[in-house]
Image (cartoon, rainbow, N blue to C red; front, side):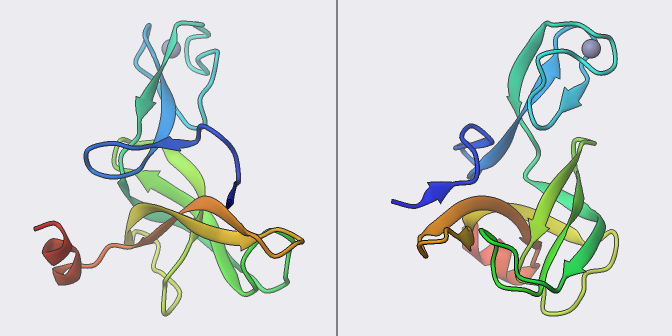
Length: 139
Ligand SMILES: [Zn+2]
């Protein structure tokens, strides 16, 4: 059975898997990962909420050395600015060339590494948003 990078980071939704963040009942501030105290107003009135599945590349770097529990180098890590205004740390996968800052990306869950024993580790990542192919998959 594949291992997860961490329990509770994402869940199913009608649109597919989504990151689960927190939303402050006092001021509406969202955060990922979930917080128990709002970073804007210090309220402890937090509720879990699904995050946007789409966003844009905010920054990234290419890692060129192998790290245990991660796909073989080179691989991309960075931050994605979700459509609901939250920036999240993330792997970036399936880019044939380095992405441009601002490139449209979509959230996915899949294999993001292997354990020392060679078992797959399931994590989340963002992949390029594709025009026609994606439109066809949604029909
Ligand atoms: Zn708040």
